[in-house]
Image (spheres, rainbow, N blue to C red):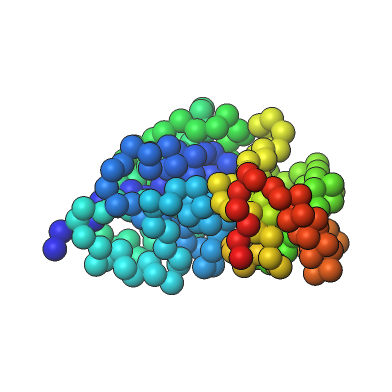
Length: 257
């Protein structure tokens, strides 16, 4: 059996790695897999790609050994976060194409030395290898936010209330049953809100992956966690909202039952 085509994508946080991968996914008619190790079983991008690109098979970290037994017709995209060593042990037995997505004008770095191909990414500040940021993440599955509270906590986080935040991305559930992917990169304009193409969830707490990842310096992780906790809706509030939306007979998406 010939090994699958493996494309490994690396670069600094916010450079546009996942954006490049999603654009490239659309060009492949073959069966595609996507992995993002180092953030547990369901990082934000793994969940988002599963929601937005249903023809792509997402693999949680525990299934990375499957790479060695996939057929040759498969194309695998593996994203390496800035916090991981570029020489992942799981890749030692495979041949793969190395793609670095880097900000324009990025000075010579370990990504340049490692890459077979360099893709120009977002125009963000070049990373300082001597002062790498922290990464904080947590699952939010089952939690629902009302929009004003979510807006408030996201503005607080991204505007520096809990540290110097370079990147924030997450999947958040709203009481009308919709889920949104939210993305912020320091140096780019605003906070991006993008509704995910999945059915409305209007029966209790959503049982599908959601979460948040924050990258920055001097992060007050305890305060960020508390701010999110303060924004969670109670089970009674979720039920109240859901009954209202079901009564309105919303037609955009069928409710999950």
